[in-house]
Image (tube, rainbow, N blue to C red; front, top):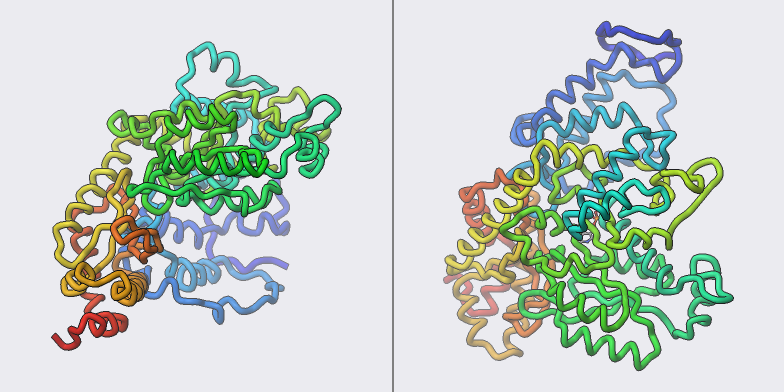
Length: 550
Ligand SMILES: Cc1ncc(COP(=O)(O)O)c(C=O)c1O
């Protein structure tokens, strides 16, 4: 059996191979994929702007197209499969690298990245251990060290002592912010309920025995009500329980209220529940708000609990001398999570957890005789995941090729664009800014002028149906805009301080792509205004304020 060939290109070989071995079927026949690579990977934003791409309806359900569950029995010709991928799949993905895609945290990448990713895929190293990754183990430790210094700013002697210490680690790479948050809280749980006189520790004896030993009726994690849902998963997986993830109210700017944090701690104490960790957010997912980290650090210190900072989105802001002041206090955290695949502009699949004190990794250390052996420098001794790819190489490349200054410029461009867009929205008579940008995220909605006036004048009871109709209009505009495929914003539902804490539907914009121009942002508003006029949700809203047909 052999795969049908398309074309051949001669390449020198250094090892004799059996051409009939399936792994070698394509050794001289990758032309179809090289062509695809040229058309897509060399400049994704051009691919998204070109004729090969069909933006409209990318989010349409495609169940019928992907309905068969039969494994293909016989090989397909590479050209046929490449054509299928282009026409039926890649043609209909979301254009995240396009400067008009301003709705989510996934943006464009430096242009060398696809080539580097190809090399990393070809080398197929597994950084779980030295024996499958060689130099990459040292490289990953160095990158973690650079990020550790960016956050915690320890001196040279500290890094000389700990950076390559086999028994410790300054942090770990993970698949993303979710796993990184879980890893941080895993260490926290194991540290709080650690081994003690006559007790093996929660990681040995389990949670029930640990609570009995320490005399607690439960554990809790405190985070602002804007915490990322990955923290709920962590509370669930760690046996703490999602109900013990205590949401703390935020102020009008979406930042955790310290008075409410103290109240929540008092309540836990009265119920004999041990506050395991307080999580500060350095850049909330929905509005980019930054919690008062220094004040939270004070409270965590007083309460004797772990201070964790979720900087999955915002962490890269520390690179900017101009903006990093907002994060004062992050250096007092016990652990910090930063996603490289967000504002460090590396491909998907790269999160990091950093521990201020390298001894914290002792609380999660694992061994196995065939791998991650005691005394080895294997990275897998201190990670939640086992086999992992060499994502650190991508961040290593960005840190070198863009440098701190280049990355800081990207951050500052995003913040400047967000400030510009917020001002533009405020100047419109028919748009309402809901969250002012602290980083490069903001939220707003379309409110026809007459509805704005009616809302201001209405009693709270009369306001409610108008708000509900506005929510329907926001959702409708967002879906119409997404399906039209010219530009994209996301949406969420957030308690709004300007509307007495009612949760309103809003557009959410993330301005991480430096190629997003002011003209594009003006066009986004113009398109939304146009879509509103055609939205099936508009008549009901206008009917409520008595303006049908005006
Ligand atoms: C603040 C925050 N924390 C954690 C996460 C989870 O990260 P990931 O999606 O990489 O798992 C996100 C993702 O958007 C986030 O914004």
